[in-house]
Image (tube, rainbow, N blue to C red; front, side, top):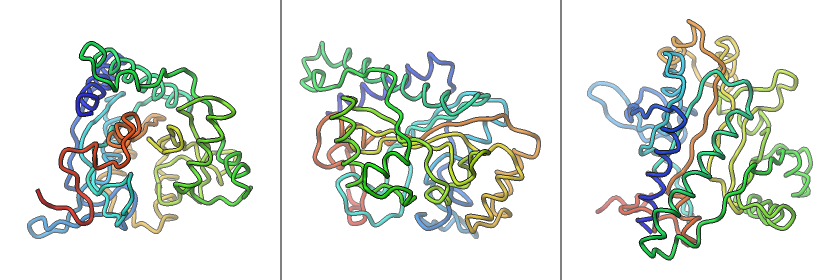
Length: 301
């Protein structure tokens, strides 16, 4: 299984590099979080308060504004969520990407599905000569992935117009329907409502319908693997989104400064590598995909 993890990482790096991405490293000690403060680990940083990074999101966007048009990072991320589930840990490996000068959200989705397909194909080619039994378990990834609007998912769940986030059981039910009707392991849930993504202040709202965003999830057989979409690149709207989320724009001054000089339309995603390994290897618990897992009870070894 850890051979699979290594092969996937190599496949992802190759897929990014062949598409002209630059690998970057961003700080893991931050002045503020990417999505408010509820799920942050606080750290004493000399005479200041700091937080462990939930995501490299703000730094990825700043790099797009600085002229780095395609960037990716594979690094740890931290969520202070007391989740006792088989698919959550407090420290996990996040695979994040950001790309500038996009014409729309399809540019972002097309890149993500291509990189996923290439990484899995590369892992299969690496594992097969080693007689690793997981090589034959990796799916044949067919493109394009189905696109299923959030509103359609709510109708399938029998709650049209509810604008409520999808829980684990909801995702499983949607995955079963997609498998039965479309036969696809990977698929996108698209156009998340603004009400669901209110705390994701950098998520771009649709100009024609501000109640909807250009955000999506990438799911695999009923489990969310990645989340992303178009980011808000217009400073006035970004500041309004921060205020609407109950956040003080002054705490994000360093981030907002990058937008004062103009930043191109851009988008990206974050993908949980541990969860992808768990799903592809058929593991019952995400902790089996991590050498030294960390959860709310486990801090040693």
